[in-house]
Length: 62
Image 1: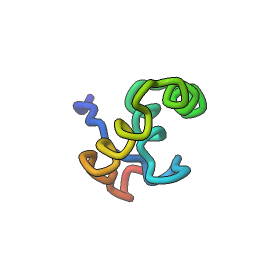
Image 2: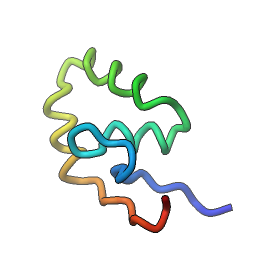
Image 3: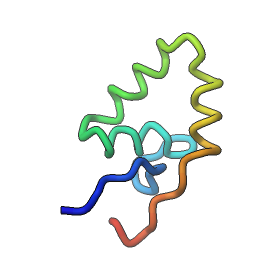
Image 4: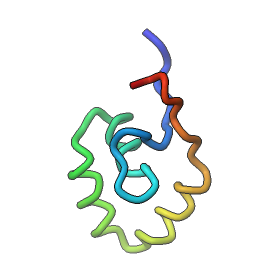
């Protein structure tokens, strides 16, 4: 089994794929991750940092 890496999703994306990538990494629904992001105190700042820092997932994974 390969090592899991946190990446932006190319399949499950609403804006940049950050929540979809986190959901794929954790094995949960992306809806749950999006709801959690809504209630984070610094949600916009955290999302922007992750959108810049996380690499795109290669298309061949899907």
